[in-house]
Length: 142
Figure (spheres, rainbow, N blue to C red):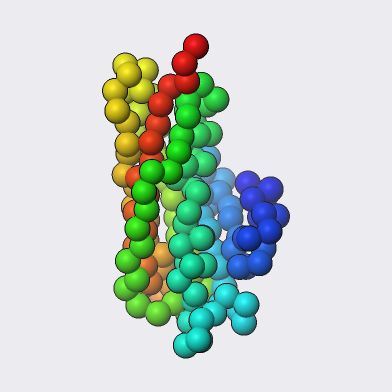
């Protein structure tokens, strides 16, 4: 995950990513409020809040399914609950059971469009935003 921390849009927004507790099934993104990621009202810019959540369920599924599968974003939404100030973070987690179920459906040629949700929380643990990601998964043709 160290390379994603060098990705210019994440560097520019002040987003940092890590595996919480070294868990290979989870990722955590964090963003501190800085002059370059705040909006007119002095709170986190909504685009940066979404950016800190954008690719991580896809990354996790792709990693655990492997290169024999195609994983794409299909849809996303963000619901802002309160202004974000200070440090905000979001955790993304898939389970081995979810990956096995997705793999089985894709191997059977079924439509696979898992929906994942995460919450962006502030330092007090209050929800700043809720992000939903709909992915699309297919086994590559031989």
